Image (cartoon, rainbow, N blue to C red; front, side):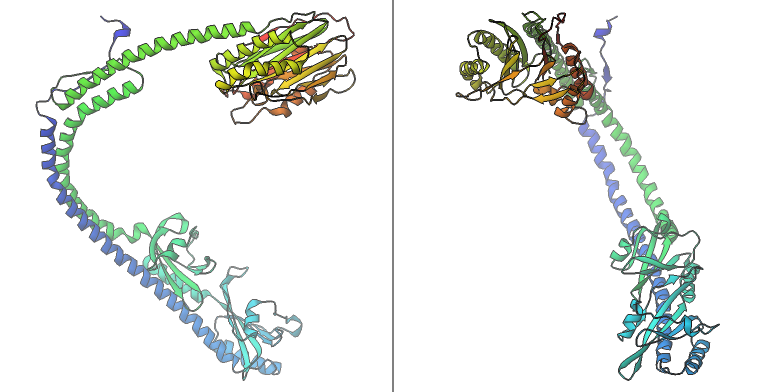
Length: 633
C-alpha cells in the first residue's frame, strides 16, 4: 500500500464511445424545440400585455370619474359662493347681512360650517355658522391669511383640505365682493369635505381599491377614503412620471399596487386610485397560467432529453473543473484518470502533464526559498551581532540603553558606541533608506566607515562631512542615502555636542526631583549622508544637568501605523517622555517606548525599522553602574 505522501486524488472520466461532436449533433436536434418555446412565450407575452392594458384602462377610468365628481362639487360650491357675493355688501346693516347669509346657508350650502364676511381691510363684519351668529367682540381681522389677501386683490381661491381637531375634513373658499370693478370685501366660507371623502369611497366600493386626494405641488396626501390602517406610499414620483397616468409601483403600506392618477381641475390636486397588484392582475395571471402550462408541458419533454444529453457532456468536464480547482488550491498531486480517447480524454492527458510539471517546479521553488530563508536568518544574526551589546566605557559616567527591531529579516537601522580620548564618549544612530538586504549592506558600510572616521575627527560635524564625501559616490549609484546622528559626551564639561544628518532631532528630558519633566527637542538638523556632494553640517553643544536624559529615535517610531492607518506620531511619544522622572533608569524608558509603539501598532505590519536609544550622563554622582543591554529582535 502506498504511503500517505504518495496518495493521489483521482477524478474519473467515464468512457464514452461517441465523441463530443456527436453529442452536440443531438443537442442541435433537440434545439429544434426552441421555435415552439419562442412562439409560446410570444403568445403569453401578448396576452399578458393586452390584459394588463385593460386593467390599466379600468383603473384610469375610475380615477378620472372620482376626479370629475370632486371637480364638479368644488365648482358648484364656488358658483354658489360667487352668486352670494353679488347679493351682499359688507357695509350693509348687520340684520340684512344675516338675513341674506341665512338664506344662503339654508338653501345652497348644506355642508357649510362657517361663513364670514370681511370688509376691504380684511376685518370681519359678520360671521355665521348654521347654529349661531358671532357677536361683534369675537370678530377678527384676517389680513395675515394668504387666501384672504388673494381675495382682496381680486383673485380669490380655495385652500387645501385640512382636518379639524375632531378629525373632520374641511376646505375654505375665499371670493372677492365687488362694487362694480372695485373690491369692497371678501366672503370666506369654511365647507365640509365629507362629500369629497364619500366620492373617494365610491372607488373602494367598486373595485376594492384605495383612493386618496393629493396636493400636486407638495406631493402631500390631503384626504383618503378612510381605509383602516392605510399608510401613504413613501414616494409618489413613479405615478407622476408615468406618461399615461397609470403604472405599477410600491404604494400604500409598502405593497405593490396598480395606481392611476387623474388631475382635479382647476385645483392643483390629483386623485390617485390604487389597487393591489395581486388583485388587479388575478385574471391576467390565470389566463397566462393556462397558456403557459400548455407551452411548458410541451417544452419539458424536449428539455428533459436536452438535460440528459448535457449531463453526459458535462460529467467529464466537471472532473476537469474539479482538477483545476484542486491545482488552484495547491494540491499539485491531483491527477485525472483517463478512460476515453475523445477530445476530453486528450484534454485530461494534457492536464496531468501540466500538473506534473507544476509539481516539479513548485518543489524547486520551495528548495530555493528554503535556501533564501536560511541565508536571511544568517544575515539577521550577523547584523544583530554588529550592534554593540555593552558600551566600551565606565557606565558610572554615562548610562545608555538601545534596541533595534528591523521591519524585515534584516534592516537599515543601526547604532554604535565609541570610546574617545580625553574622557569623551560618542554614540551614533543611523537609518539607511530602504529596507531588506540592500539597506543592511549599506548599513554595514556606513557603520564601519563611521567608526573609522570618528577617531580621526574631533567634531561631530566634521565626522558627518567626511562620511558624506566618502560615501556619496557609493550611495549615489544605488539611489540610497543614510540618515545619521552623531553625538559626543564630555563628562568633564558636562555637555553634549551633536550633529544631525537627516535623523529625527534628539529629545532632551529635563528631570527634577520635585518638578514635572520638561521635554525639549534640540534644534539640530541636516541632509542625509549621500544626498549631495557638498553639504555643510552644523553642530550643537548642549550643556547637561545631572538629571538630564537624551533620547534618540529613528523615524520608524513616530511613523508606526495601526490597523486603521493612524500614525503613532510625535504627540504620543512626547506624552510618554513627559512621564519619565528622575530616578528612573534609561532601560525602563526604552522599554516603555517600545512597548507603547508595539501596542499601538497591534496586528498591523511593521512599517519601518525601529531604533531607540536613551542616554543618561551620571554627572557629579557615584551611582552604581547600570546594566546596559541591547534589545534586538
